[in-house]
Structures are given as structure tokens and as C-alpha cells.
Length: 332
Image 1 (cartoon, rainbow, N blue to C red):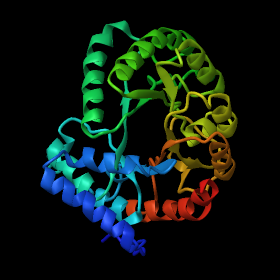
Image 2 (image 1 turned 45 degrees about the vertical axis):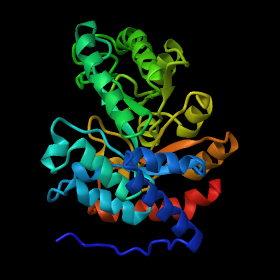
Image 3 (image 1 turned 30 degrees about the vertical axis):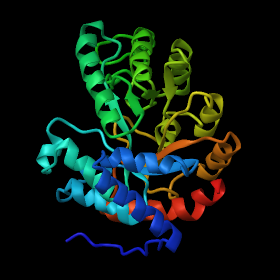
Image 4 (image 1 turned 90 degrees about the vertical axis):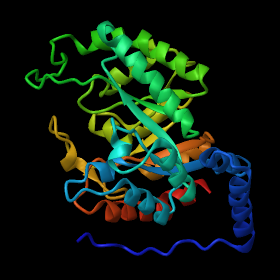
């Protein structure tokens, strides 16, 4: 049986209670889209930063399977603002949801969709039609939930026999793949922008955008108007970069964050041993938060925990203690 950590939830004052009740009543009486109404209700008093966690922590847990509804309840209990949810094929149906019923559950729990991760072989023209169709569906899905962020995962690297990892699995140089995918990312970014959605390139270990030089190359080849950045602090650090310096360098293009704490040296391809709960690794989050405050960053900060030795709830609660105690106060 998974152990539970009982956390005291903040009690709303009378004014907030009345405000929330009015919003809920308006949803019921007006018969409007619940998630859209809830999102709209926040815009007048939206905090500069919103905090979310990814479904991946619960989805990929190596213990017993955890229902999606339990993950949503955990996030609500912990006081998060949203969930990053990138639905796999038939995943909602697997847990007994339709898009509409899942949207309504999020609204009931006062959670928003923060973003949707999207990956593909963007460098390969033969796959562009397939990727375009899937991407347009993702844009539509993001809009359905009232969100606007798509996190772009680069193609995999894959050739572990190459000590320098300069070539990927098909022996095409990583540099050439980056150059090949840049125009297509611009195209996807324009499609997203025309729909009120934005994409952010996400540097990731074991992909062709991993090192600082690879980050610099893809950012130099893409149009800032269409392609933003969604840095992952842990992947950048394990990939040989300094998260704070890269954030400073591309501050004008950052539209989303993956917060990941890590420690030690990355031994390809497995980075699970490097992942820790927030505040237990080597990433300098206080300095990052101070800089975000300096540049008046607004948007989503998503805790991306790929692996834990705890239960997902315990892991999320541990990270939330660090967010609440060390990170949030910096931006207030």
C-alpha cells in the first residue's frame, strides 16, 4: 500500500470563498465550458508565475499503476495550479475519461492544463506529413483545454557506439539533422501562432539538442517569432550546460519551463540515477528564480520528475515543500 503524506491545505478567506462560489455558480447557471470559464476567471488576477507538475511522474511510476484521477487529486491537494498532460493514444479512455469529462475534472479541481509535450523526427522530410497531422491535432487539443504551450522534444540521438556522439543512429551528423529540422520547426511554430498557441524547443538528453553548442545552433537557425524555448534545467545541466547562463542568453525566447533537479555525472543513456526531488540536487534554483523575477517572467514553471524512488505523491509533496519554502518567496 502506498503511504500517504497529509498536508494542510491553505484555507481560503471569506472574500476568496465568495469569489470562487460566484465563479462556480456562473459556470453552472450559464452552461459554459467549465475549463474555459475557470481559466478566464483567473486572468484578472493571474499570478506572474503558475506552477504545475507533469503527469509523467504518475504515469511512469514503476510501482503499481496509478489512475489519472488520483494524480489530478494529488496535484489539487498539493496546491498546484496545473498539470502538464500529453495524452498518449487512447490514454483518456483507459482511465474512463473523454476529453470533455477530463476537462470538467480539471475545472472541478481548479487545475489548468499547463502544456503538452510533442516530439518527432522533425529533420526527416519523409515524415513531415505525418508529423503535421499529429501536430495540428495537438494544437487543437491544447486549445480545447484552454492552454497555449506546446513543448517540442527533439529527435533522438541513438548512436551509443560513437564516443563523441557526433552522429545519430543512422550515422547522419547531429549538426546536419539540426540544420535540416530548423525550417520545419519554423513552419510548425507559425501554424501554432496562427492558432494562438506557441511552441518552445526543449533541450533533452539523448536527443540531437543536448549540449550548449547544439542549443545555440538550433536557436540561431530558427525564427524567434515562431520558435521559443522551453528549457529543462536538469537536462541542460547534465548535458554540460549552465542552466542559468542559457536562460539568461535566451531570456527573450523563453515561454515555458521544465524544472528538474539533478546531481552527479550523466552516464549515457540512463539519466534516472541523476534525478532528485526539487532542492536535493545541484541545480541553482534560487539564482534562476531571482533572474526570472528580474526580467519579470510570466508563465508556467512545470516540475518535470521523470523518476523517483518514492511514491509519486511523496515525491510531489517533497518537491512542493521546496517550491513553497525556497522558490515561491523569491518571486513574491
